[in-house]
Amino acid sequence: MKKTFLIFALAALATVSGATERPDMQQYPGQYTADWESLSSWQCPEWFKNAKFGIWAHWGPQCEAEDGDWYARSMYYDGSGQNKWHQEHYGDPATFGLKDLCNEWKAENWNPKELVELYKSVGARFFMVLANHHDNFDLWNSPYQQWNSVNIGPRRDLVGEWAKAAREAGLPLGVSVHASHTWTWLEGSQKYDGNLTLEDGYKPNPDGSEKWWKGYDPQELYAQNHTPSEGWENEGSIHKQWDWVNGASLPSEEYKRKLMNRTLQLVYDYSPDMIYFDDTVLPFYGCDDQWGKDFLASYYNFSSAANGGGQPQVVVTGKQLKPETSSALLWDVERGIPDRMQADYWQTCTCIGEWHYSQKRYNKNRYKSAATVIRMLMDVVSKNGNLLLSIPIKGDGTIDDKEREILAGIKAWMDINSEAVYDTRTWKTFGEGPLAEAVSPLNAQGFNEGFDYTSRDIRYTQKSGTVYATVMAWPEEKEITLKSFAKGSDTYSGKVTSVRLLGHGPVDFTNENTGLRITLPSTHPNEIAPVLAITTE
Image 1 (cartoon, helix red, strand yellow):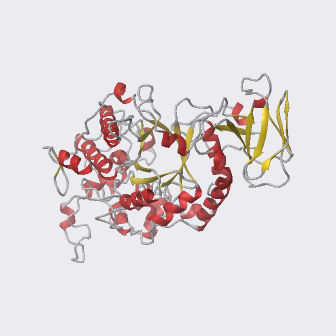
Image 2 (cartoon, rainbow, N blue to C red):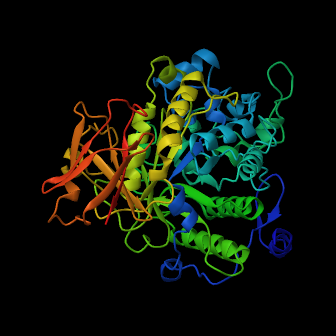
Image 3 (cartoon, rainbow, N blue to C red):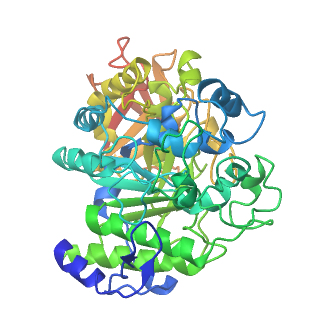
């Protein structure tokens, strides 16, 4: 199908600007049309409902500095910690800017096969990779963006190699696309090297040597040939203008068309099972709602064709979905968990550290623990969601020893208790205890994580007639009572006939009016959270 489509795409007459002019990618025809009514017939595929847990390689040129999130933006703001770090290690951003960081990044120790196999062994059932970030650098063989990992830096097709490793491991592949925001996100570079042009690359250096980026147009990377947003000199202005409001400079038609070409080519050539967009709803929503509808229709039609004309087997995520969009794609919550069960499937994305690798966070031992991850996972799954966990990767393509220790802790728990995770569905209630009764509103697209789970907090899942109760921490007492099994309660499911502690075996219990009283053993099969498998008559 790929060969057929490429012939179809090359028939287009329009072109885009760049080092080499290419035809526009065509929208993929099929049963879906680019309107919310049609797109809302999409259904979340079973593979995603069953997977529950994925790992994300949020890795790109900004990780080369190993100085944390949003480095490529903050390095251009005088007085910021990352600007100071940059000045100390690389010099003036006017001469060594983002373009040079991309070239400095070599990923010399990267072994995608080893990492993907590790993540699968830990318990991941899908795998997500960064395709581009707000830095606008494409991490694949991208003909519509000359600033990509095949031409510059690692000189490898990172998405392609990740994809090969994931498919050899039997894991569905996701790709995350963030580049819609480059237009405003990199405006701080205009004070430094952000306004350089193709012609500037042909000017010799002060010592007479040629610039390494000769022949490459910096505007293809920076996209700063525009009047900046109101208040752009303020590093925090981007947060107010994320949805193309409050004086944000609006992107050009050429810019939007180029991102469509890049993203459709990514889909058609690499066939990902999932696309993550770091946008409210979809790219450019708020200033151009049609972009997202056009993309969804093409992606769903492409997947439907691959499925013999059946339902598309792909997932697209967006943040802060609106009522008219909520059925057309999957809701993603960043670093947070809704406080109630959701009727539709959804996802939490979070990270054990910062999204981009931070040596400071490693030095200060500020990673999420394995226990924190597992408790988040069970809270999310009990509420009809999946957890996507980022493990930050160093510039050279490796993960550190503390991250491997955390992964080992996750694996130890999953090896015993995954029965309560994979292929499960929600029960009559997601849980009980203090946190289940509390109100914990999300902040914007999420950002409410950090719950203090205790042994009084219980989370439920169910599968094939068995209810699984995860006690979010081992209680000091040997006996616990599950109130959701109290006779006369809304969640009462009949007399309990057996209770099994995963990793241990049958345990003593009694059916009481106040709930199900269970006696736990003195030995613990794991030290994070016990899971009880409960059957009723």
